[in-house]
Length: 261
Image (cartoon, rainbow, N blue to C red; front, side, top):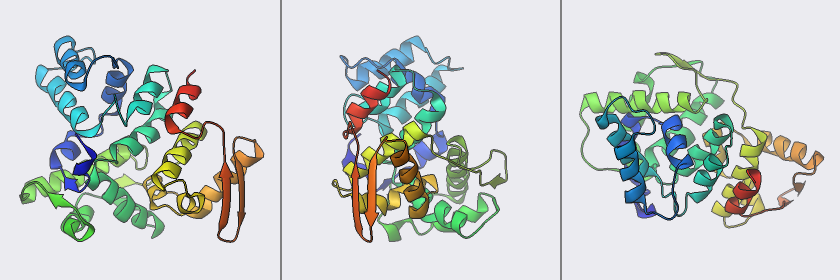
């Protein structure tokens, strides 16, 4: 996987699912002295995730290979898993990392689910998402091949299930929004990651559409920053369009290492 695939839309990974627990277990055992191929071969050979079949173990390996580079840009995610970060805190960080190369998931969260949340939509079923999937190319996405109607509906259902697996929606055939809140330590990581994504600009970080993946408006983020400022976890000041933000361990990897030290 490389980040030059950012605009590629894959039905395979969406239908495959979030695989949160499986990904956590794989990264918790990741050997940084081995390359990705050898690490994933160990998963297939040893089946330490307890997959019910070789086919499922291979599916997990393929999805992780497609989504992540644990020995490179996604190393902080592996560091947190190996350090024993509780999985509920780890999940928001995983969501950030997989959406760096998962165009469709990010597109859905930022441009559809967030908007539905803001509009007060109460219940969601896969059919509600199908028309959105027909407009992917308008936002820069490109499918690897044409989808059948069946595939489109499976992708729509898969997107909703992934959102539920990350805690944004309830489970079940009919989804509803949860009262989602990013845990404090997860938020600390995301602040650093999104600040880096926005080229170190605190004002752009504050207004970044990346927060939409967590159903967060700018007002909610400001409230969270003021709370963190009160507890001296960050230094945050805002005067009009001028934003000052600073915190220790500014680099995401360094912060991840300190979180689980």
